[in-house]
Length: 278
Image 1: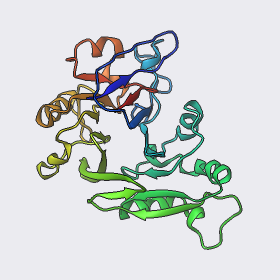
Image 2: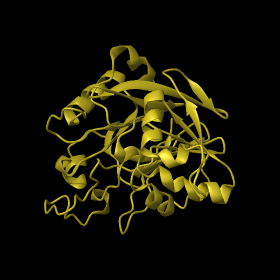
Image 3: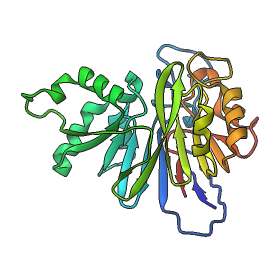
Image 4: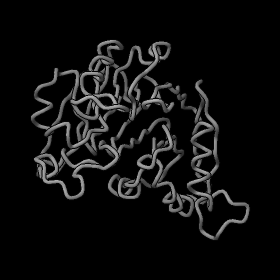
């Protein structure tokens, strides 16, 4: 079992406790739960973008995981710096990348601060195609003759098999973002899947027996490269996690308060700053 603790957010405090039979040893913080444009969208006057509910304000999708004294971040989007400051992150062990799209890698340059403070290179885990994209996007980081002060990175190649970061076992989950192969990740009884349209049947066993699943659900309407709400619910019904939080939401999904009220208790809508302990 698990304990869920929802953080305080600007005048709105919610707590939900579920009994557990072991000391929680994994903490997950949703750093960002929005789509590539974030919410509110620039110049948009829709009800979601004009909402005063802080849960309707979404930075680009990213997640922080704390376990065994290690701190991992999955994806460094354009809001990475703001997310690190908001959560007062003082240490960072490693970064994992799901794929190479700009809204998931654009903040990589800001690891310079951790290099300086921690006095070490940053370990970065990505598959070969994503590494090649990072080397193109950040050629100055990987140049043989480096400009003073550029980020210092140790690249680690990952494939579709389990790997370790210290004592933490990480299981990649192959999924598809339209036709682009992407990775989700499972750590213990938690899994994270963002920017996903489909998960091959042969990968579904990796999503069994989960306590928490964080899953993309862009909007209600069908989208070519992202699961919509119905597709997300179909996957949830197949793998049956104890609880699921929907992430990577666009302003077209609807208002947090209204849409969450329509969902069953085991499916909730994630928001920036949500903290979960397992």
